[in-house]
Image (cartoon, helix red, strand yellow):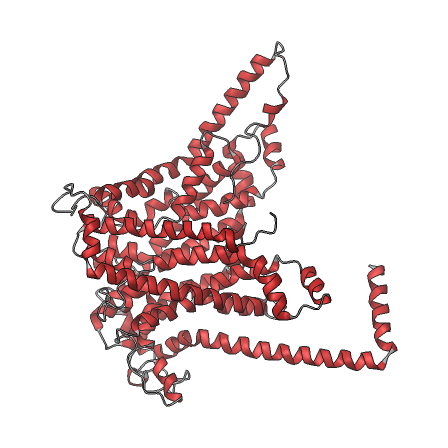
Amino acid sequence: MTDTQVRPPVAGAQKRPPEPRPGAVRADKARKKRRRKEALTAHLFLAPWFIGLLCITAGPLLASLYLSFTDYSPIGGAHWIGLENYTRMTDDPRFVKALTNTAIYVFVSVPLQLAFALALAMVLDRGVRGLAIYRSVYYLPSLLGSSVAIAILWRKMFGDDGLFNDFLGIFGVEGQSWIADPDTALGTLIVLNVWTFGSPMVIFLAGLRQIPPSYYEAASIDGAGKVRQFFSITLPLLTPIIFFNLVLQLINAFQSFTQAFVISGGNGSPADSTLFYTMYVYNKGFTSFEMGYASAMAWVLVLIIATLTAVNFLMSKYWVFYSDK
Amino acid sequence: MTNNRAITKSARGGGRDTGLNDTLLARTLLAVRGNKLLTHAGLILFGLAMLYPLLWMISSSVKPEELIFREPGLIPSSVTGENYGDGWDALRHPFSHYFFNSAVITLGAVVGNLLACSLAAYAFARLEFPLKRMWFAIMLGTIMLPLHVVIVPQYILFSELDWINTFYPLIVPKFLATDAFFIFLMVQFIRTLPRDLDEAATIDGAGHWRIFSRIIIPLSMPALATTAIFTFIWTWNDFLSQLIFLTNPDMHTVPVALRTFLDSSGQSSWGPMFAMSVLSLGPIFGFFLAGQKYLVRGIATSGLK
């Protein structure tokens, strides 16, 4: 992570003379006063953020930890039930189903999405004319992808008489409703996530720009072909960005909600095949108002995401290459 | 300059010396150009495939209902505005009502984020205070916090305040800088601004508020533009929190209304639904066209630097 302060707190601090001169004590006092004043100003600038932290983010985070050990509902109030919510999850087939669905979705769609992003970024980085236009076209789906409108489009596109079956008809393949089939419904959501590869692609493009062309020139003089250059120069130098994209997209994918919710009509149908983790949390918390249980599941989600990110960071030692080290 | 020209001249001269080199050069150039054409063809085809679903939706929205799923292809054989009229009045309120609600929330969120995030960013980027590193780390941590883990206590808090079915739960948090991502983005930007200006202003007797409002803010326009555009798009697309905090149909926003539309009409009236979906994407598309530069710069820099 980038660091906040490398420079010494106060510029004058190092210039302090070795022995106190008559004016030094007064100067020290003035400096202290100035520092205190600056801290006060800083807290004023940060006041909205502090209130937000207390009431909207960190405060509720701790509150939901407490609620996760209770049977809280808006009508019944909260009673301490210990770990019951957590043990309940292991026996809850719908919870297990939701977790499995989400895991499949995340671990299939994210690698595919990043592969598309990297491939297209590589092609666009070779000095293609009209780069800006292509980049915009490929990026547009990333902006629209999380909207309800696109979810509606997807539901129709992969429906019985939708666009996808028209396309298959060209090859004489008999279509079906891909949304209504429990075996393929999750697949349509994976396709939707891969479709939004534009934003990691833009990040890859920025990363590719940072690789000095002289590396490639030197390599080609040494007789390295395109494939060799990709594996020996591009890929190693790009690993920090691949890592960044991976962490970001995994976190995002684990939390995706809107598309599955809209496409499945809010309940994960058909046969719970598109029941996502976040959707189950929502249904428990805001449809049946078992808010204690919902909080426990939300906390497990946080732990999953935190663990995944931590594992990623630990593993990164073995495959991420930082050239400035 | 002259040196450069001399070098290119000699390089050209070198090529002219031998006929062999010349044909080789021509052949390579041809191959490169052929390769480039092929690349462009591939890129265009791929781009079309990506945009095809969107184009299909737009074209379907102007087709008469009975043609939508009969007639494959993008060019409609007859065009009608009927779907737009039907969709506009399909729900309890005309769609203008939902557009208005979405616009109010989005505008409030943009103003809130610009104000609160830039204030916090100035403190983190320019001021010294106790425990600064710790607070900064906490701020970074909240970026990754899933909404689901805080939404139940938020719901309880907002019900206590009687804010359910008002716009406050969707706007007030933005004035409290809860979108920490934008604080981070602006801190990164402000750090790149030279400190000389601040110091000169301090010598002239300006306080921090003056430095912030007269120097930092005017210089931070690119970061502010990125923040405004992303806030707009994210809030306009946002569904979960609007679904939870706005249950009364009078308060519904465009995404929630679209979802109600989908659930209430089942398999019929796809034409009107597509028409309203197209309209709902309009503002995002507009901002995308207007703010491309800032969008691309925003993602490229906030993540990496």
